[in-house]
Image (cartoon, rainbow, N blue to C red; front, side, top):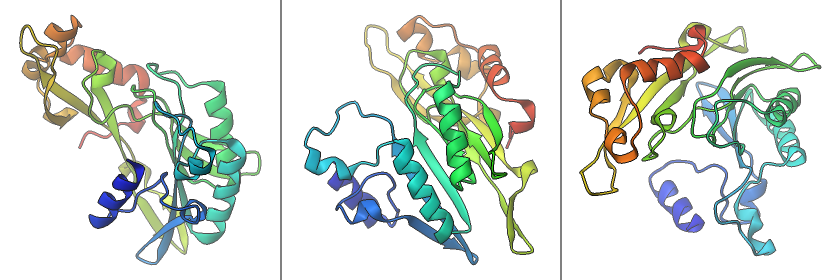
Amino acid sequence: AIKNSISMWKEAGIMPLGINGTKEDADIIQVVEVKGVKIAMLNYTAGMNKPIENADDKYMVNYLTKDKVVADITKADELADYVIVFPYWVSEYTHATTDNQKALAKAMTEAGADLIVGASSHFIGEIENIEADNGNKAMCYYSIGNFCSSFNYADAMVGGIARVTLQLENDTIKLDEEKTGLMPIITHYTHTAGSNDANILGVYPKWAYTPEMADGHGIITRGGVQFSMEIIEKIISDNIKEENLLTQ
């Protein structure tokens, strides 16, 4: 499955992260160059639903261990002008950030990470500006939630897209804070009585989602879950600071 995924993405001209076709690939730091700026991107997972049992095949997935991550970020910081890390750190069905995530995010920042975009909780989480003991700084999205799902949790229907704008000023790369933040998105599905199927109709930015759609969401009849625009607004406001929200 991993090899098929790699082949599919490469044929589409998209660079896969976090999975490797060969042991040599596992040692490569992926770097893209945009307008003369080199951006390194790293991806890791803390776990899998079906772990790789054969020790000889474990190179196929980048596992989230502190030593590995810090070593890779240190190397990436030497190769690129900007380093982005995508950790899948296990802490499911919660908006809260764990102490382990905080400590690891700080270690990543100290090693040279500039931007951290996390996932795995299925719910959106806090956004933090981190300053490490050595003075390095990074912006961290602890969880952007689900992009698309058929869960029976209202909180899992509300995800986010991390929109980040970088500026190059006097050979220094910095975030354009006014154009950087989280754009909330809603997964919308319908449900047919007597069936357990979720008929996913699409993913909508919050500004394009209507109260009528929320009131007709399939999660209400399929999961017996309360859902409305007011609930969506509360999920967002309880977990994302207003200065980190993007409307469009």
